[in-house]
Length: 476
Image (cartoon, rainbow, N blue to C red; front, side):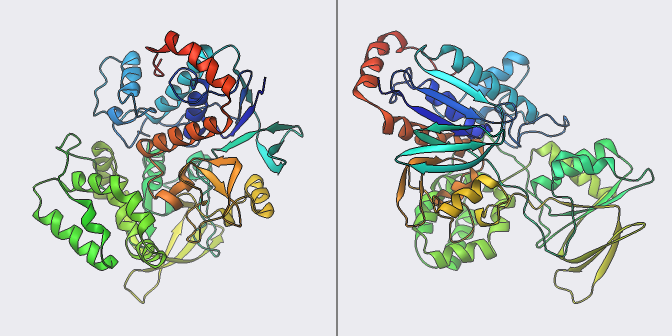
């Protein structure tokens, strides 16, 4: 038998769902791994949690309603049904605690392991991958514990990179969501400065208020924009024709979009959702200069309208601003200086030549993950870069891949061994952050990976198993 080993590095959303896909590949009609193969998941923590869905305050909610959070596009109600199994009162429009989703993924993986064929082995390695080399179509993965494993295919599901540094001259706590910085706040009324005003800032502010309701904070970003709220989730599908945005310079496309939104009876969120569906095609077709201009001038506006907050969370943040517990400002931080009584932050408000100084007890970087692999401190990523096994996107958005998720090397050739799925697909598809986008990428890549290993023997096993599992569901 031509048994193969597939190694998945990373056990967040993408890695966990990819493992589920591969374990169920002989049952769901897709290409089956060869008889006797094994799937190895390399992840130091609990599978399914990753950075996004680990345990945290109850105020940390999913930013997408339960009805749209299924990990499997072919079974759109899977997460909603799972949630109702834990609480029958859950509604499709509810924004559930984020830790629930980590539990959901973990349970689905365990169910997939139990229902996978006996000839398909599944193994968990609870450590980090630190290096990777490819020789003769075989990858050797070095592990943090000093061991190594060989694999015929490697799926890199590394998730988001660490937080981007705001400025070289700014000293700030980078791991905002670890909450360790809260422990160092003084006993008297603390004042915190957040570098960034997006979704990560909202999470950090909610956690700060939950533990220290007497605190005050100021959040500064280049534009001073807050994420918009969800609303009209069940609005009728927009009739907006996104093809009209495929012609002309960026300014013309923006003007066309605004005019159609103004003339439409649809809510702007419905129109944006319609554009979002076609945005990957528009992004790939746009010339490099146009994509660069979009990133410089429109990305901040896209992000706050595209990545929205639950209405209740938005109102909570609004109330904190009304009570002067949170100030949102547009500007640029110039420097920080630590003194005995805290940290002096010097910044310049947007559109002003005057400087302002703030004395704060903590400076917390909430600018979000850094998508540029060339700035990554991950030893595994550095190993791939040094060998030329991956090709960073020229705009600093992630890694270049083909449409099946195969990594492109420094010469632009698609790897026969290395695949990638996760938010760094933004370089190719732009939309690669939320579950509704990532689940499709995982499905495509897992299918392509399994197909690259499929053998006549594997197809024969699948043919025998098909009558038994024709009515089987992946959503256990």
